Length: 81
Image (cartoon, rainbow, N blue to C red; front, side, top):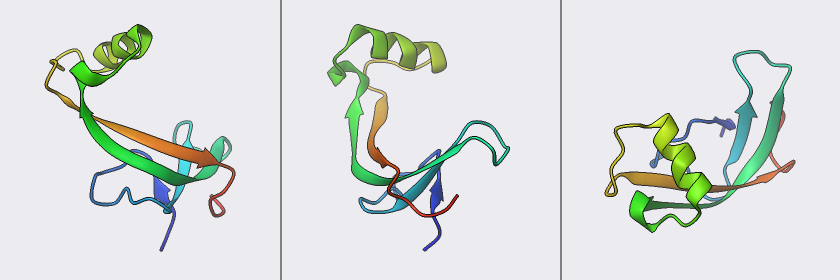
C-alpha cells in the first residue's frame, strides 16, 4: 500500500498506515510518519481555546456540531516520501 498524502479521508485514514506530510507541492519539505490514532469529534468537544480559534479561522462556516478529524501521527516512522 502506498503512503497516504495528507489531507486524509475517513475511509483511508487507518491506524498503522504510512503518511507523508508535505509543505506545498514540492518534494523538498516532506515528513513521513504513521497514523497512530483517528477519531472524529464535534467542534464543541475540542478543548483548547487556541485550537478552536485556529479551526474557526480555517473553516469560518464551522459550527459547534461540525465534525473534526483528530489524527495522531508518529513522525519518522513511515516509508520514503
